Amino acid sequence: MSAWWFPSVPVTLAPATTADAEAMAAIHSASFAHDWSVEDIDGLLAEPLVFGIVARRGTWLGSHRPVGFVLIRAVAGEAEVLTIAVDPRKRGGGIGRQLMRAAIDRLTIDRVGMLFLEVDEGNGPAVTLYRGLGFREVGRRAGYYSQGGRPAASALVMRRDLG
Ligand SMILES: CC(C)(COP(=O)(O)OP(=O)(O)OC[C@H]1O[C@@H](n2cnc3c(N)ncnc32)[C@H](O)[C@@H]1OP(=O)(O)O)[C@@H](O)C(=O)NCCC(=O)NCCS
Image (cartoon, rainbow, N blue to C red; front, top):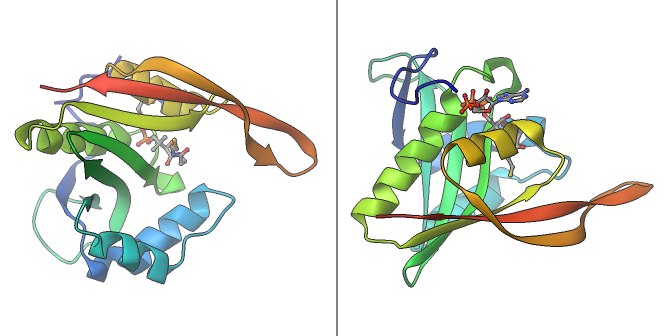
């Protein structure tokens, strides 16, 4: 396992703003079968209980476009990962792990007790990422993700205790 504090791709992490929504929608579209529009992402960022973190290439502040992002909703001491995605050309360099670590750090400071997520059980990179960060499987939803004509894949529900 790689060490999360020694990333192979230098990125700057920052709170996501509406100025990032277009790049976030493009990364989402390249990552999932279902698109989220710029308006969808703007709407989520406007929700008071939602926050996003973007990763930009480079170690200095500037106008670099995001290469990955995570969106989190926190309600009453519990939070969920709404989505996380990294530009397909930049995957495998530790950006996803850095985004998740930053989200966990912020939630811990905010005294949120648990972080939940749902993931397609066949999504190897994502399941590896979450297990490496201490998430444990707490449920399974059979046939949760539709896959065109093929049998639907199951979702794992995973939880990480914080603090
Ligand atoms: C899941 C995702 C965000 C991971 O981002 P990433 O920047 O590539 O991840 P990292 O480089 O930080 O790697 C994280 C872990 O996953 C592992 N990993 C990365 N790519 C992998 C691959 N293709 N196969 C297996 N494991 C992989 C890494 O080895 C690393 O494991 P470690 O912590 O034990 O070292 C990215 O693959 C992605 O955007 N996928 C499409 C969207 C998606 O599926 N999101 C999750 C929805 S629940």
